[in-house]
Image (cartoon, rainbow, N blue to C red; front, top):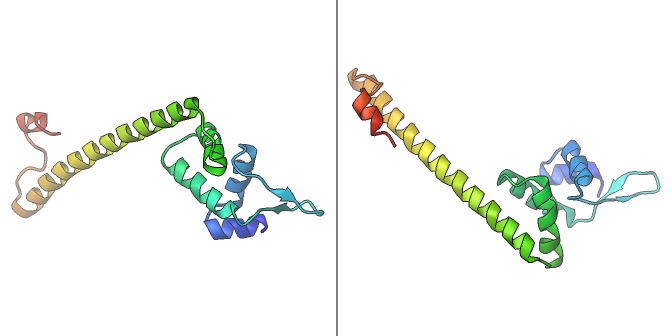
Length: 131
């Protein structure tokens, strides 16, 4: 399939697909006219790349991970890097949960203000108890 079709099937821009090639995350063959040609398996590969980017992995980590996914080969170093990435993601999840909880506290105060006129901003003592 050509680059435009791959972009359409994955929802990824042509520019991003070219970037993936520059980063050695994706490979294409060239037609006699110089057009990029991708196998059907490129759809799954692009979707995996997108998921890993969304999880916050840098292209270097993704490039190191792909041979394990494609060929089934891993090294102890790769496993260490992947474990570190997972730990980093877990930390980000914790930060997001904390932010969500604080937002919930602010929303509750704003709702009370709207309904009762009670001050939206908690007093200093209450503010210290916020999560």
